[in-house]
Amino acid sequence: MTSNRCFLALFATLLSLSVSAEETFPQPPELQRDVDFWVSIFTEYSTTEGVLHDNRNLGVVYGRVAAGANMSRRQRNRVVAKQREGLQTVLRALASGKRDGLSQEEARVLALWPADVSNAELAAAVKRIRYQQGLRDRFEQGLKRAGRWRDHIVAELEELGVPADLAALPHVESSYNPSARSHVGASGIWQFTRSTGRRFMRVDHVLDERNDPFAASRAAAELLAYNYSLAGNWPMAITAYNHGLGGARRAMSQYGDTNYVDILRKYDGRTFGFASRNFYVAFLAARHVDQNVEQYFPGLVPDSPVPYQTARLPAYTAAADVSKALGISERQLATHNPAVQATVWEGSKHLPKGYTIRLPDSLLSTPMPALLDALTAEQRHSEQLPDLFHTVRSGDTLSQIATTYKTRVSTLVALNSLSSSHRIRAGQQIRLPAAGPAPETTRATAVEAEVLASVNEPVATDAIIEEVTPGGMSGDITAALLGTIQTALLSDPSDYTVADDTSIEVQPLETLGHYADWLGIKTQRLRDINGLAFRTPVEVGRRLKLDLGSSDVATFEQRRISYHREQQDGFFRQHVISGVQEHTIREGESIWILSLRRYGVPVWLFRQYNPDVDLQKVRPGTSVRFPVLTDVETTEG
Image (cartoon, rainbow, N blue to C red; front, side):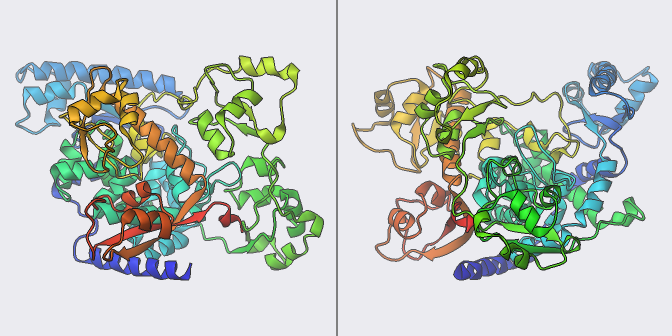
């Protein structure tokens, strides 16, 4: 671990040097209108009001919409819809070429646009009217809350060479609310999804470190440093934090690495919607407000950091026993250790061995390690309590549950008397092997409960009714606005899309058989159209043509993404990335052997850290990066 920390320090230095030669967060003049828009949303409009605006030209704000503090969402939507319809009528009239004899409202709307606006642009604007809720009050509360963790966050960012200004990002993501949740399961002040969070911290039914601002800030620094190492600039590294590295790299390939204006204005990736397009400019706006608090929120006093004590648990221990030993209530223990899941407080799991407890100095009269030393032998356990049940969460599949608990889908089907479709639903209790077979009298009930998600389909999430702010400070997070492709693999830079010529780039773990299954065709058909002899393996990085006669692009891509998501989720349930190791290739060395034998890294993960390295033609002297992996069990002690 010492050598790993040395590498991280070196990596931080290199990052700092690489960004000092250029403007870290460039703001081209063309983006000023967008930044100004978000500054106004953050500072001028409260959550009881909002604005109707053009979703492409944020300089066009049609007007304020007052919702009222007691107005329901349905009532607000009616008000918004009525005003939108009125604006659409005006825009249609203007788009028809009307310029004389304008009504007062028509003249007002036309004046919002440039003098040379075309009829075609006005016609397109009819469908681009969007409502944005104000966020002044939530941003103000976030500025206050940020004081609790600001010093820690800045320290974590700077250790990895990430600019300290990125401490403003949680304002966009969550308004610094540790309890923030999104429709796609993103959680905590940094809004990690489970898939991305598992790469850098423990996320399971015992501990979910996404909800701990201290642990999550370390993970965010690692993720941002990783994004920068592949994107090469901070605007796209920040965009990738929301949109995903694969999409960000495709946009850069199409328009140029630093052509930010064209990327944000013109890139039309299928999941590059309003939220992704605005994520960087919303960050710039949040950063500006964060650095000019007195201008926008005069007299605001941020919360003070809480002086904490920390100590590692010497053994698996019941939460009740730890609370008693420390002389505090379980509620107090839970308040200051938000990573601990409900299974622990319910008593079905112990606090893990090696878990670092954090408590304010004010709650302790004796140093915490001394208090924990008083735990009796009967209160210290060498093993964790076995899992008896799993509560299905939105996004779970039966195969993922089986992987988590190291069992088989067939075992879960038998224990729970699932129907042939293997459907499960959010909130359902899945019996696990340690609980034994269910009593005969309960099995009929279990069968009746199977309704929503199959073994290959995630549990359905709430429908998105309307677009909201990037980062979701109004409670609906940016990730909820993205397509399933990007939310599934945000940290994977691989290109899983089908090109316009119906070709794809072969990725690790894929075979012709996979492609045939996803397309619903025979494998031989793929061999024929690609000139491949029988049993000829496909090479990673090679491009293959597809036959989409029996399928479509969206279905193929979704099946492909689901396959890789399942493989990666299973891996990161067992391992977390704790650092990066640099290696210079020597004569005779093979990436495959280095990955699997020396560094214990699967080739697909190596390629994510080195997406531009040709695995078939790596030359001596090439510098590559291997992620350092730590077993999840090891993190417990």
